[in-house]
Length: 156
Image (cartoon, rainbow, N blue to C red):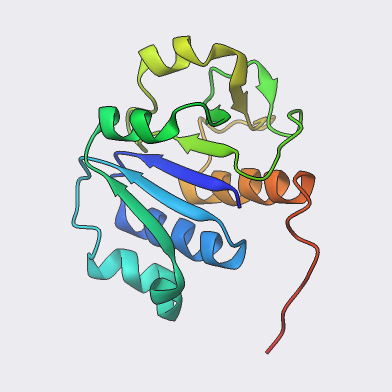
């Protein structure tokens, strides 16, 4: 299982969309607080539709709580400051993808500490950034594929 961590998310629909992607990919969502909204916010649930109850989610009160949980797990920080393209790592089951806040990104101290595992999604066109939920979908899909976690497709 890939872990997806959102650092102090600020926009409920982004969190809801990422939650839905996590359910579809059998990924574990981590929310690193504080957030700008209640995690039970209607907008977040609306974006996740009826899959919210199937979500594996852990709420971390703050940076320290998350970093304690992270321990020796392999983190990949998704940031425009990354030096490795997102499709470069040899992702494995249990890896952690960490995404920054929509407005302020990830703390500089984290980017320095985990500099060797900061990754980026290329932006060849004239835009400043991609939407957080779109970026999470791109990177989570790639990580899950490389880790061999998408071997089946379920249609109901």
